Image (tube, rainbow, N blue to C red; front, side, top):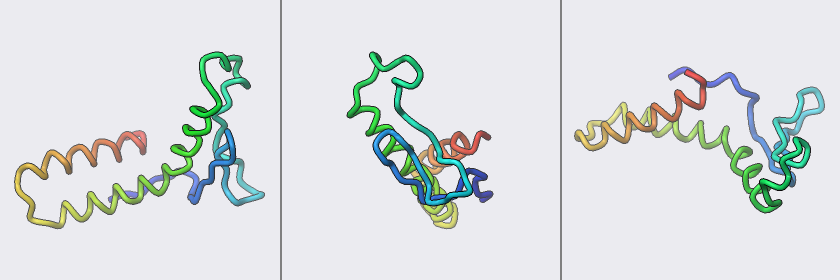
Amino acid sequence: MRRGRHTPGPWFAVGYQVEIESETVADICTTNAHLFGQGALHDDARAMANARLIAAAPEMLKMLEVACDCLEASNFDGEDDEVLAAIASVIARAKGE
């Protein structure tokens, strides 16, 4: 399975920010809606929860790829084909495929 071309992890949530430990690579993003004039639409707790979820994305993608590889290598029954297809679909979406 082809691996992603995103900024390598680990990523860390620091308040509203999603950051990496590198001085030579830009941080990932902010979930601070106030910066975009949309602060009234989001509360702080939700914005910080979004940052934590985004920060976990590289690890979640890696684990989904491992799970997909394991399922493909196994002899599961037809019910697992749906699970495998769902996992493959999420991986493709995360990679922009």
